Length: 134
Image (cartoon, one colour):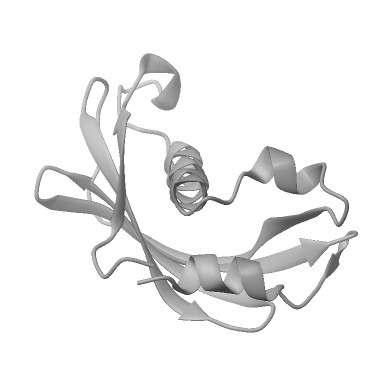
């Protein structure tokens, strides 16, 4: 992965907020999922094609440590940053941050398992090489 984080912009809509107009905590999970998906797409890993390939595979979140530091509100424009923190044989860890300008709103360390045929499996070399490319 590039040394700089992959970035993905997100605008906060009414549907992302709670009754007070503040982003509902679960919405941040959706924002981070979009960031991870766009990171894979930018590396040439098409998830739809992966699901329907001869040897179907995907990625499943195994765990997440998350810190909610500041709140976002409706119409805020946020940036989701995603960086590879660790690459293992059958899993990876991604560090993610959600920012509003320079303010860090949310940080997370996401553990993701490579899954093939419904089970965790060792990543093939072509997937590891894409994830590890500089």
